[in-house]
Length: 148
Image (cartoon, rainbow, N blue to C red; front, side, top):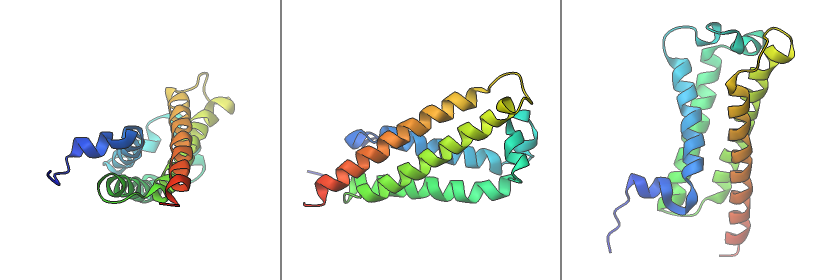
């Protein structure tokens, strides 16, 4: 029996692929904001971000840190030891990020500045819902493994 750990095993083991997906989405969002140019100024959909005084620099570091922390927790959990509490915290933070994004993308529509919602509203709301499910599942894992 080998101790070989493949990336595919880490991604798919124990049904954690969705947690990896949401972590990658947060990291991709941060990386996109870190690219040259003023992403938040490119569309009225980002109006609420700008109104709050948010800029790319203020968003990139915390989003990157949270995504990296989640990925580290998932890697550790899948390869060495169970860490459902770390996964739960990461999923709660992810749900908060996605819900915040859904709300911020809805603000221009709700405030009458645009005539339609962006697809980001529904997309980020669904991602938040699934991260809430991941947090619940992680908390249940923590309760079960507390007595191991």
